[in-house]
Length: 372
Ligand code: GLU
Image (cartoon, rainbow, N blue to C red; front, side, top):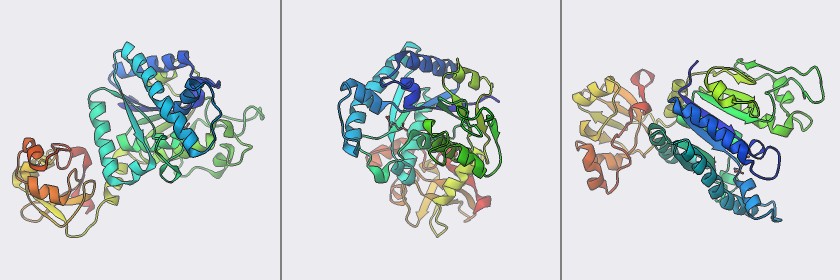
């Protein structure tokens, strides 16, 4: 199996190797491995924790209340420190990084989701390595995901990753706590549609399980990611060259096979934003041909717009004979498309005063009309 788009989740315990400060040799090792794989042409993305730990270290371990503002203080101080280390280290290997801070609302709100998706696609296209963390500095409990395992599952759906690697301090998911039970076996593959209740229990459904590494959260994240079409591995981040070896096809730890494809999962997402009412975009014969050939829909090929819809909604695209061609997630609202239809892409900015993208519907955000 050769992976094209790999997401690596690195937790605080991996970055600090269980101490109370960032472990620079460990960071260097991770950066080196990610760089080697990126240089082979694989698009790498990181979800990295460590902001709060870095903040604590920078402030010399202050006594900070455990409430939300305390954590926000530490993360807002630590996040730039963490990024500056990543940025300097990756630069040594010839790679650029980008910081993306997200919260749950960015995945729930379709406009934000589209923004995040477009930005990620641009970065990956430019061979930049995005480094994602939760936007702890501003996120309050109502809008937080709260942990980066869950964040990485959502991000795997956002970018259509074909592999998510959850680095942990355990060798994978076991049938019982291996430190207490010599008969505990490593689960090497999870490929059933539903996760068996005994696995949830083994992962620490109660405090007595393998809860130390947050295994229950990891299992939930792995289950979510595989439902989005991403093969997911829970592996021990301490194994030598683990990232390089996994990217080369070796297998370690517990592997969760996808329950559907990335494409099916995208289709499902697009369908959740579809309102099968009367809204539609009518396109000309040239645009119809282009769309059938797998190209994006540009404003020049649009004849007219019906109904009202927002950026990020999924809209029916029809030809001049009213035949339904595709469903597409739109980069512009109905109001905006009314102003730019028939125009060249390079005129969008002068007409609207801004240009999100040249495409009204990107080719990756279309699904066939057979679903309508
Ligand atoms: N976002 C937090 C941090 O950077 C970590 C959250 C987690 O460990 O899951 O420190």
